[in-house]
Image: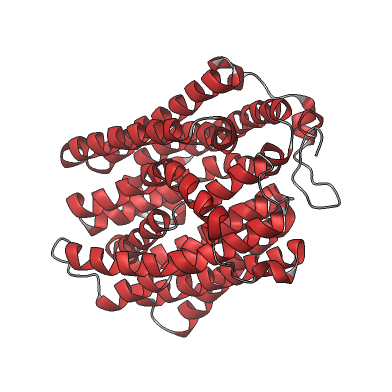
Length: 436
């Protein structure tokens, strides 16, 4: 069920991007992508990975789902204010470097979405760890459908502008957060949504979260910071084309990330040995699915870009092919990290992810001035696979899993696990069930 919902979600968001890109052109797309990306980056940085600390306690039986939900809801309210303040300071600092075509209205609209972005990170992961896989998928698909409908209506009613696109995106973030709150209330109970003072347990969650937070931030920046660097170095038209490369290439990562999300429930609830076996099997499936999709995208990149976007976008073809193939590395890291939060020292997870980010940024700064968006794609691919290598090394050290184990074909049982059961819970294979 999650796979179907995620494909529907991504398909509608892909259509949204096509409509906006064709209406605005490369430079106009850059004018809304840059502030939107900055807002998402700030949302990731300031949400403090509270869901990581809660996930570790849940997996180790140190708290129950009602308490975890109340702490998560309380934290989502607090980090929103932190995100807004950070965004305001950053915009002031970056204002001289930002292209003059980016309006104050665009910056304000992008910033207004930050509290909802931060909340969604916390609430969505908590919902998945508690087993609400089906309702999560439906919530995200509904939000995407409203976003596509909004941009369609706006296009028919008036001339599309970056500010109008960002308004639709903001509305989608608001609806996503509300949908996740409703889903948690149905799963855990309405009382679990009442904010609570953190107390000793809340301080413990915060301490754990801050130790895993560098990893979450680093992996996200590996996926997004290159777009900001392109904008600062190569200009808005290059940013628009590169953002198309990334949005299309992420189709190779979509299915694999869905598997990683579905695996969170088993990684949290199963006994440790069963959770390890489940993780290896889900990672094998993620590798298989993302590899097939990456090859398809790489081979069809030119006609895909040419017919969907037009001749002026064809510079995005080579970066698209490279990023699609690099997405297999991201698929591996995403599938493994949920278990590493449970079994590995959090500081080691953060160190491995941060090393991948530093490598990515250094290569991007070195390559973009000479090779443009192709150089940015090469730097990102190296960063993706460096993150995967770090995750696999930690899995070997703390789980005893050989590096090559995740590259074996997935079992028939794992393939069957893709189909949802009637309860809507995560598709967990028999090896992952274990005592609850």
